[in-house]
Length: 125
Image 1: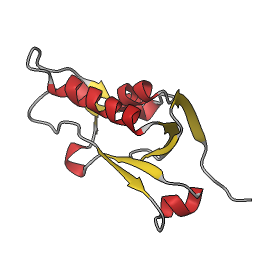
Image 2 (image 1 turned 45 degrees about the horizontal axis):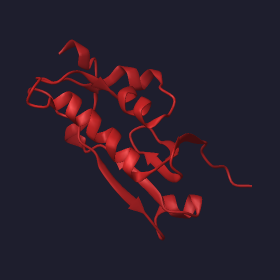
Image 3 (image 1 turned 180 degrees about the vertical axis):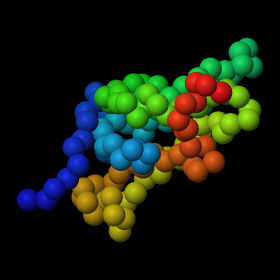
């Protein structure tokens, strides 16, 4: 018996996904994951018609359909140009990677680059 992390089922696809920021595993489609990332980026950056708004990790997790948590509420982004804006990398981890070896299937890894990391107390900026 192998000890594996739990996987949440979102009802939005069956690709195995890993959110690297907090190590959460869930099943969704690549398209659904990318749409959630784009939604958060547009929300914070604004659309040209508005100046943007605050968003946190739970904004993204809620869109994806995974359970929101305390750290997801505490860490986020502000629309202020003095702070980093959200951006995400989405890549498949196939054969020969740790994630593939652990689960025996390709894993969609969603990461946040260091310069776009969410920060605590984002709403106070």
